[in-house]
Length: 94
Image (cartoon, rainbow, N blue to C red; front, side, top):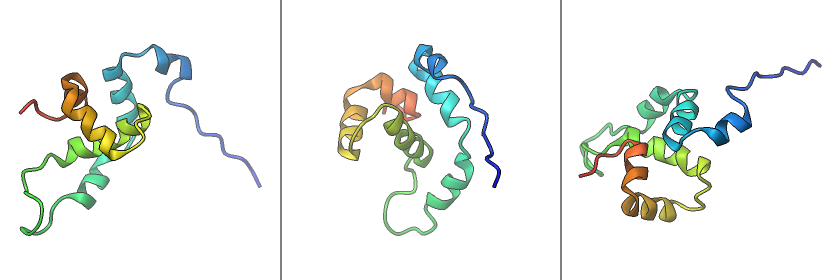
């Protein structure tokens, strides 16, 4: 059985030297967000409001792992407290 090695997108040292915005964009650009977005978007008029920012929610879940935020509750708290983090995830200030 052969071993297939996947080339890395960037080195770990490059990742540490990047600004948070650049780091998030570099990692998120490698993920196919369209298929995830299609699966989680609202398909009926019942339940949560239709105007929720699903794309920003998906991105914030991935950024949660990058920033090592342990729980969703801590992620929501950081999104509410840190405006720069909120904007980096794609949410609006309002």
